[in-house]
Image 1: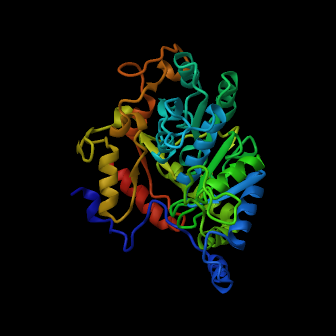
Image 2: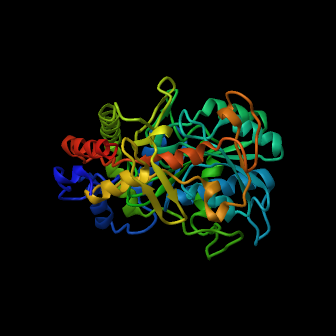
Length: 427
């Protein structure tokens, strides 16, 4: 046991990484659904939720779905059909084509490519925002010039370098699926994330900045595309008096109950963002003097929603740490620490942190997929490699980074105690 355990008491209730923050208005719309007996995947909550999200984000159409993963899947499916035509009944729309994908993300971003029989090619991360590196993307097009679809993520609510990424995609005639699951309310050059791609997706998972417990939205400016996704999400029923099906469909529509929760949450989005930003700023101030840095963002062009506050330990301040597929070990060293030590220590005090997303190219299920990076993070030489040499930015961030408790119900006093625990890990 470390010395800090002698004078810091565990929290009397768990401090979560991020949990739902409810206000009571959600119940109003849930009861409304009960009173009107719209306990189904249709109703006023669904309609109003789609309208609210489209208006807030600045797109023409939002289609409510069961989760963000469903939104991503149907966006990828739609892009594949647009690029390669309608597939045979037992084939996906990508049927063997490659797709450039953000490497540092949750696997839900990528799995839709596999659902549609495509092959993900992972593009390394850049250090300025922890998102897809435009230089690595450009190099990937040199290696795989036939690719016509790119999936971009705004990690932890921090906007990617959309102008640069869009310019590369436009140069090569590629469509963009924009995964804004974590970034609702974040802006890039004054515009909401979710509108920079050809198709967008957001999530209302229980830990997101606005939650419905589950749920998601597909975003588009095309009525035809919105109607197509809406049809697919309701088992692809045709306009016939009987159940007529001419293509594969899915049970992906959002529940009127879930939409009621989201409807009640939406008026509080800006309040939630302000609370999350305050948490980020308190961490940044409180961790000054330690050999760490916070997850970065482009303060000139973007305003994150600060969904999760993360930090990365300086290279020379890392104690020895090893990880296998499911476990990690470290050796304590004076003046140094590592994500494993900090996370295990926080857990002993009843506070939840997490490692940052393990890059997709390191995941067992995707280890044979191509991976493209550039030396010098695109600022110097641009010698791309598929595997085996050079700088791997995502793996480095995974090795040294962690997500801090970021629950917006956490008090300042509780956060101060978390900051003190982190300080003492470096003693």
